[in-house]
Image (cartoon, rainbow, N blue to C red):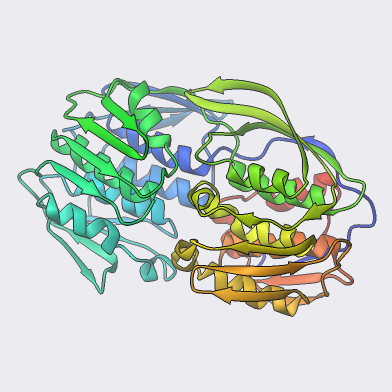
Length: 437
């Protein structure tokens, strides 16, 4: 994908019907939990993007067998909880994926062989102390410079049970510890300050693990065998978010997004946009592989500002960049607090988005854990050049702004879009966006 992309002001409404790619969070987990299963898992809808393919390649290096059928479905032959083999050169490349690194660190902390996890420049600056500390409490031996990758994970004879009170609501921390307990054959419990996304819990339950959830606490009892998975991965609401917001803010738009995951721990963006006055209709609800799924019909709407409740933050943590675009066209001041986690994503998303929005003519006030956006109904962004800072979600958000601007918006640093949504440009063009690559 080009490093610079331009979106032009939209002269007509967005129209169409499409299905975004498979859910990124679920795809990561499907690969890892299939590796650990006894038997053959069948996975459809797996996201083909740089981050998830890095996870899949790591699973192959650890012993999984992977094949693809003519329709794109994956067959993954697992090795069981105690059958992993050391990668040939003792290293695994996680690329840009913090999810891959944190989840696989839990798996590898329980192994009888050593392994190094490393990644690109962006990943090498992301905090890993949040998983290293509790893993070390379990008995793991992990080396990291200043709490950042690469991670040197030493061989172990086994880990100890742990009851962990997490200081952050993080599905990656929670899943890392569940995997460490699972691969060690010990009990593990994790309590969070608020419930984070629960894909791991749902998947483990489907595989027969002894897992229970109460409020924001999860407990996993030592499990000997995981059953293979058979699942269709729904479309990713985090990827759909860009088209959803675009349809709300581009006049005369109406689009339908098909087969979207509306897991309640992931769908707070929909709640926020509806609270802002967004016309979003939920259709054809069903359950797919233990996950709530639906079609969404979105129509252009007049938006008003809201205060986002802090308890909603974990359920929409990846969607704040594009919410900031919507808030710029919402009458009043949209306030967000309790979102300091945005500063340790692929970029400091608060800083990157505030700088870019200032360039595009938006009045924004920045805080340590959030922001205030002064929006106006009928507002049009300035045209101009904005830096996405190699962050896929910031880059795509700025491009959406170009659809309701006074002149084209040119975004640099867009290569990272391929980490999560390689078909973004194609899908937006299909809906009627004017794009120059």
